[in-house]
Image 1 (cartoon, rainbow, N blue to C red):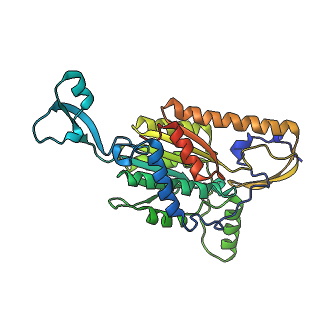
Image 2: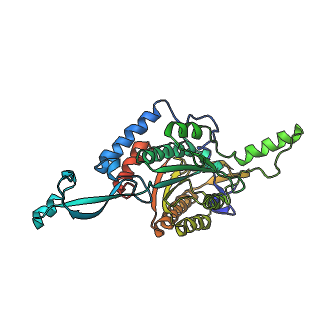
Length: 349
């Protein structure tokens, strides 16, 4: 038996699954009946909580406003619309002035979804939660006339899968259908079994199945920037079980390219606290093989300490670049996600 202290690398690098969090691939319904209607209710809630309408400039994470924005004053002329008369200025100066507005181009929202193997963990899975959050943010963005694009990444050797395609418009129902068909990458042990089965049947199979999270975020960032996307806000929805140096590199590259950054850090409920004391047989979704562990009070405390340190490190990486950060568990209702977002207020403008 091994203890947590005796493993060769920190627990968060091994992406360990402590029995409680089982991988269930393609068994969850990403979008339940009535989900689209619930998104519309949440959109209305966002408008009311922000204190105005989306058309008044309360918009989710866009790079610049996409509605009418105040530009300047000019003297009143007969026939001008009195709705734009600044009565406060008239009271102070005794002369009527009209507010002028300039219409900016639509904002751009880019959503990067992590579909590496560890995202399949949890009840509901982190991947299911991530897709629901992406649909929510996209729906609010489209309602504000922003241009929204969703990108899924699994492995640095695989291209990004994106919706909508270039030069096509998107919509929430179509996005939900597209996301429902998107799986996570298979766990290491599953890909290994698929390889063996394929070899026995005489089929050709890639010698290196795409199941590793190492470099996945770096590859996604590079592929995203190669597409020369319009500057705007980038949402990264991930469990961030990546090397901190890799996360830092992605944040720096996106920030240097002029993008505003938002991180939604999601963990499964069983990952968010130390495992129960006792003996465990551990499988890593992104590494083949298994490890027997004996979890003591000391090792459980170390687990929690390293988890807290990693969460803090990821948050600091985004905040140093002026980005936004939100941590949630995969079993959190979307209503709470939105309300917490609105309390920050900077997420809506």
